[in-house]
Image (cartoon, rainbow, N blue to C red):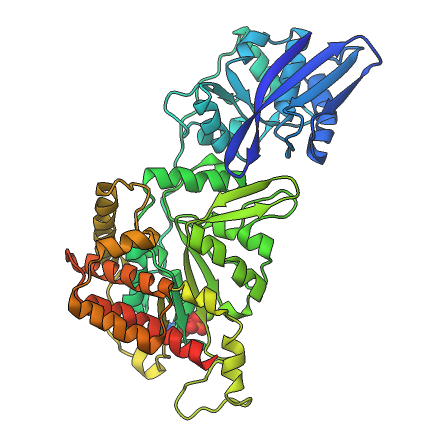
Length: 510
Ligand SMILES: Nc1ncnc2c1ncn2[C@@H]1O[C@H](COP(=O)(O)OP(=O)(O)O)[C@@H](O)[C@H]1O
Ligand SMILES: [Mg+2]
């Protein structure tokens, strides 16, 4: 007799149905698992046998064959333990096979029969819900699974025995409740930064429209400080974004206690990070920092110190909002709608451009350093600003600046206008001007003769690419949204163009 249990395999954040078939037949005693499993799946045999033993069930003196179908789909991870054990228990009559039919099952087993937490429970629950089934998952992940839908049936047992008792009706388990993470600890506040008004303005514009931002300035100017305060002015995630962000975090095993949070991700990988760490990949095709920053901020401090390959690998996600990991026999993609924020010194010694300073290596100090950032990457950065150093004298006795809370109100207002606009256009998935397509932005930013002349002039002088032109329009739209203006005026265009100048000076120096 063959018993069947449904489980899933992950392809990106998508859950692909997998059928676990267990057959107990006369033959040499032992257990074999087939179906293109990785090492963790092969080792599942030992865990399942030990867990069954600990739960008071001995292996039958027969041949046990486990097949994970479809047989040509690669299976990775330790979450196949529980479905295999349940399939075997059903084949032995320890649990009713038909009771399992309505569930998708995933979980890892410890040798003592307890069910240990696994990654990816939220996407699995969403997948199960779409298939019209319930979910059996580890107790520790129950709160996470409950987010998938208010009425999906969830069993979150602590142990194999607990689950068997539930099916026998001797100890009924209750449905876990969705849990929300602790309220965010206080972010550092913009009020700590004295002066730097134009840098703060650029930060506000970046937050309002989701634009990419590059800050160039000498060491100690406060670039890292500014970037770290960006999360304090960003609006919280909307529910649809919250689920997407949490699914990626779930696959990566970064959801603490299965609790979700509506804070926008802010990731700041170190500059020694590899390409796999940033765009994803590696042995298990894990999501990288770019995907973990989905709907949030990826902050790259000391930008030229990242390896050029890593930086160039970000070009594709910045354009298409997804990271694609190509494998020998399949390809996986993770969403990555990111806002890139970067900071750099103007040259290796950090003081190029300061009045009276001459780098020891001459102008090459600056050109060599800045040439590490390719033109195509720079082209994708809408706002580039120079952050000059503030002198210690300026800090002494300076008045306390505007707080993050005050700026966040303006940002939230501008975002609400954008959301209304794109929802009215039938594009509810877009919530920022940065996400708008090139064709549409030309439509929603009609230029008058004056505006056209200004742009034509600027693009002749600065040599705008087509992409740069569209990005200027997007920034101008955001500036108008911040002003609460219906149409984009010359003043908005002029400010948007000015944000590309710092970088163009840089590109010409390179
Ligand atoms: N505008 C400012 N207001 C208050 N403190 C500042 C300001 N700029 C720099 N600082 C001080 O300088 C330190 C270094 O700033 P940081 O952001 O690390 O500089 P950078 O990243 O540009 O090298 C900060 O921790 C802070 O103490
Ligand atoms: Mg710094």
